[in-house]
Length: 117
Image (cartoon, rainbow, N blue to C red; front, side, top):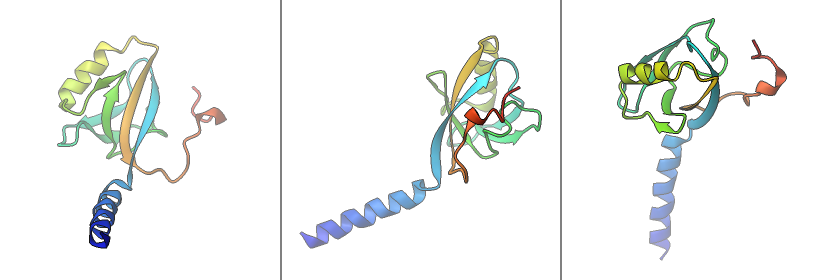
């Protein structure tokens, strides 16, 4: 039984190392333009560039994958489809965007008022 145990440890270890640097984050985005450029990738729509004036400039990073918007899975979407979907929801006061990205160095803290407009 010790050999089975070591196999389990090895497989969970390799899985953990590949997933370790990626985490999911939920971002509340305001209405209107989000000021970012997104490209199509195998993992889903990937953030290619975030403009300095973007309301999400401090919250989203280049390389992040957009996996969900307002409960809608976006992993299968191309960048064009994602843009169309976001535009259809522009008028909403808030959109909840779930991203998968590198583990952040610091904990995101919007309660500091730093990101208030």
